[in-house]
Length: 416
Image 1 (cartoon, rainbow, N blue to C red):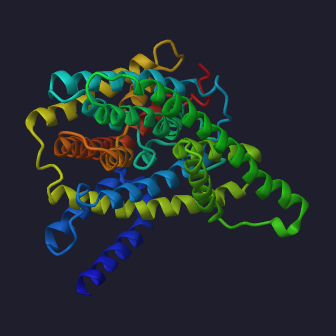
Image 2 (spheres, rainbow, N blue to C red):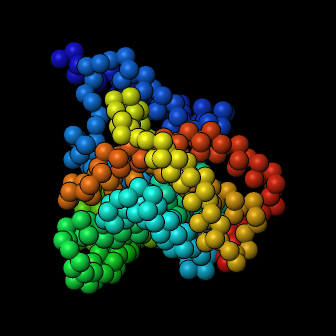
Image 3 (cartoon, rainbow, N blue to C red):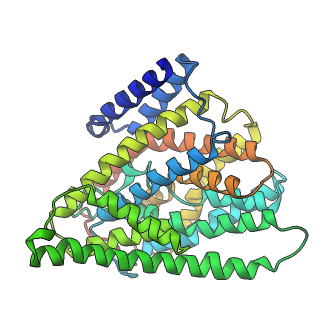
C-alpha cells in the first residue's frame, strides 16, 4: 500500500508541476524535458522500492504507453499547423521524410553491419527506430498554437516532419522484422512486405485519416451550423477523435500514426480560422504533457536502473556521431536546392530530435519477434534519446531566438 501511495503522489506532483513548465521554458529557454528527466533519475535513486521501469521486462506496458503519447502528440501537432497542405508548400517536410530519412537509414545500416557486426535485420531495425524525429519531445522546436500564423520556416518544417515521419518509418521496422523471421537467403517475403507494409498500409492510413478527418469536420462544423444540438465546445473531442481514428485505422491494418496526423490536418483545414481549434489543441496538449511527465520520469528512472548497462564506448561514439554528424549531414543534403537560407538549413538539419517514437518502435519490434543484441539496442537508443533531450533541450531556445534575430523579415513559408 505504501508503494502505491508513493507512486500516486509522485505522479500527482509530476503532473501538477507540468502546469508551470511552459512558462519555465519560456523564461529559461531550457526544455522541461530535462527537468523531468532529472526528477526521474533522482526519484529512482532515492526510492529503491519503486518498480523498475525496464522496457525489456515491461515490454507491453512500454509499447502501449509510448503508443498513447505518440498518437495524442500527433493529433496535437496536426491541429496547430496553420500552413495549408499542398505538395508545393510542404516540399521541405517531404524532403526530410524521404531524402533525409533514407540517408539516415542507409548510414546506420552500414554502421550496424560493418562497425557493430550486427545481423542485417538488427542493423535495419536500429536504423528504422532512429529514422523518425519525435513529435513528443520536439515541442520546443515546433510552431505555436493554432491561428498564431507562425511563419517560421524552421519550426514549420520540423513540426510537419515530426508529424509525417513516424508512420513513414514503420515499413522499415517491418522489413527488419521480416528479415529476423526469415531463414537463409529466402527473399520471397520482399513482395509481401512491399505490397502490404509499404503500399497497402500507407495508402489505407492516408485514406482513413482523410475520410475520418472530413467526417469529424462535417460533424463539428457543418452539422453544428445547421442543428443547435450538434454544437459543442468540449476540448476532449480531440482525444476522442485521436482514439477513434487510430483504432479504426489499425483495425483495417493501416498505419494509425499516419492516419491520426492526416486526420488532424484534414480537420484543421475544414474551418481553418475557427476558434474551436484552440480548444481542441489546448486539451490534447494538456493530455500530452501529462503523459510526457510520466514518460520522462520513467525514462529517467530507467537510466539509473540499468537500461544503458550494455553501453560500450563504440556505442556511445556512434550515438554522438548520429546526433552531430549523420542527421545534420543528411538534413543538409536533403535540403540542397531549396530556397531556405543557410541558417535555416543548419537549424532544421540539427534539430531532428529523437525520443518516444524510437522507444515505441523498438518495443514493438521486440514484442513481435526475436532479435539479437536486444540489450545493446536498448542501450544505444536510450543513450541517443538522452543526448537528444539534453543537447537539443539546452540549445533550442537560444538557437531559435537567434534565428529570429538574424531573419526577422522572414515571414513566408518557402514553397520550394
